[in-house]
Image 1 (cartoon, rainbow, N blue to C red):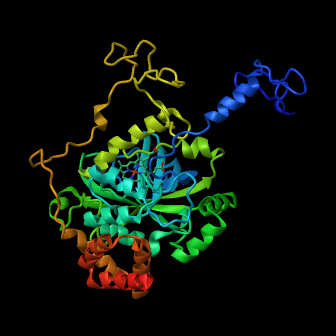
Image 2: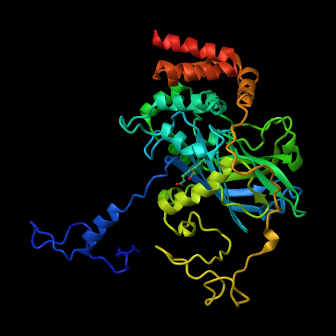
Image 3: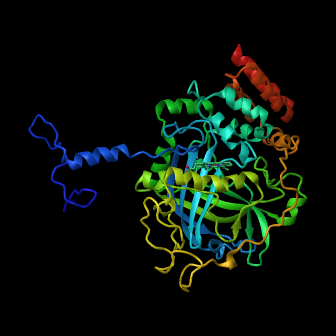
Length: 483
Ligand code: HEM
């Protein structure tokens, strides 16, 4: 049986190939509502792209708990080994627009929405454990340097390196970006990191600090700059093609969720600031603890509905998982929901991609596209507190244990700059092999070659503080390019 075409109001439609005209030569009659509706809908098919991370690829799947971490968290999803929930991931590049090529050198976003029985828990991270800056105050300026110049309408290496040179804390992340890990072959072959320090608390109200790691089970694979350039010449959609094809072929990509745990008191004595997003926690001191497995086994039936409409936010946490004093994280707790209200509308949390799979009871009301119906548990309870026993009430038992803080408010503190060079130095000198360092020098020089001499010199000075050979290597590559 064929399906009958209808208007969006459900009425059957008789024709869908020509306009309704007065004769074969026109003109069109104004009562051709189907024509008007088709044109009007087309005009409204686009929504604003994400202000960052506009280009992305998504998949749906399942998360299963494999290890007991109840000593750290009372989160419902982790209450029993074997627990599972649906998940939705979106991977992305940061700077490019919606039509950007997939295989560009950039940090990759790594977002996971866990639809747990106690609400949605979002980890909105990257494929790198650190970030360019440690204070959300600088984020709009930083992103401006990654986007197009207001006059040339081109991306500006001058702006990027000018900013980074003034923010030496960025050298850790820029080193990773220019390293072999800068262009993963597709999202399946990279790790993910929650990056920030979060917290967990257990049923006794004891808190630990936590980092989240998603370890790819497909192995790490990256493109060289040259291979990526050739690939982009052939296809701009390599990630979407690879990811979609793998899932259709039932080669379901998997990641193991791990945590690093730091006791609350240890944060006072550890030699680096554990809440600074430009620092990693050394694995020998804070080993990875396996938690569970993510498997992506479904391509969304409609990309726009599920992936473009996906609204991730670090503010989406569940009882047993909390924030930390990380100031970047706090800025993000505000920024994302605000972005979603602008990009998707007031009731974005009710869209299929974002709607929790557990009951939802809140007192937010009306507004454009309120299609959810009453959710407070009683028809007369449209405010709170109220007299209706069955209406939704707060539950103090899910409260986070209090966080002790100290210090004077109204401080604009700059952190110790020397500490910013310690971890990039270890990465450069102890972790990278000579051939990796050579490729890093070449990639860095290629990226900064278009910059003016003063900007080059300022950034080279930053590299020199990481390691003299780092500066010398990049200098030599620049000389080669300039020759
Ligand atoms: C204070 C600093 C930051 C601010 C203000 C900020 C703001 C934003 C905004 C407004 C969006 C677009 C959201 C949307 O329209 O859906 C976004 C997307 C994103 N951000 Fe950030 N961001 C910050 C730092 C970070 C950091 C440190 C990370 C990773 C560790 C990160 C990872 C992401 C990811 C993965 C997305 C894309 C989410 C998706 O797939 O839909 N951001 N950010």
